[in-house]
Image 1 (cartoon, helix red, strand yellow):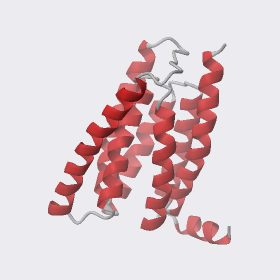
Image 2: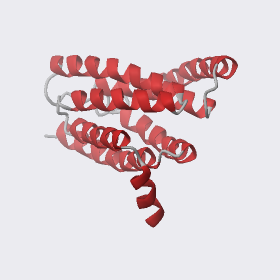
Image 3: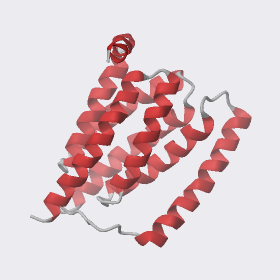
Amino acid sequence: MQWVLEQLALSSPWELLAVILAVTYLVLAAHQSLWCWPAAAISCTIYMVLMYQAQLYMYAALNIVYLGMAGYGYWQWRQLPANAVVTAIELGWRGHIKLILLWSVVAALVAMLLLRYTDAEAVWLDTYLAVFSVVATWLLARKKFATWYYWLVIDCAYVYLFILQGFVATALLHVIYVGLVFYAMWQWQREAHK
C-alpha cells in the first residue's frame, strides 16, 4: 500500500485529474446519466496528450476515438428512452465470435503497422486493448449490456499495461473500473427490472 501511495504522489496532476474524471464517467454511465459523456470527453482529452508523450500511440489514438464516441454517446443517449437497456447478449454468441474475430484481424494489422513505422511501446497489448475498447465503447453508446463483459476483460488487461509502463494512477483507475463494471452490471439489471 505504501508503494501505491508513493507512486500516486509521483503522478502528474493531469493524470490524477484524468483519473477522477474517468471514474466520474463510469459512475455516471452506471446510472445512465447523460453527464457521463462530458466527463469522458474531458478525461479523454487529457489522456490523449499524456499517452502520446509516453509513446503509447494506440492509447493516445484511442482517446481521440473516445472523444468522438463521447459526442456520439451523448447524442445517442438523448435519442433513447431514459432506461433503455437490453439485458441479453444482443448479438448472440455467434455474433460476438464474429465481432471478436473481425476486430482481432484489424488489431493485428494495426499492430504490424505500428511495429514497422513507429517507436511505440507495448505494441500488441496496446493495440488489441485500444481496438476492443472502441468496440466496447460503441456497445456502451448503444446501451448494450454486453459492453460490460468486454470492459471486464479490457480493464483487467489495462491494469497490467499501465503498471508495466509506470502509470500507477491509471493502473489503479482500471482496478477501480473492474469494480465499477460489476456495479454497472448490477445497476443496469436493476433498472431493467423496474
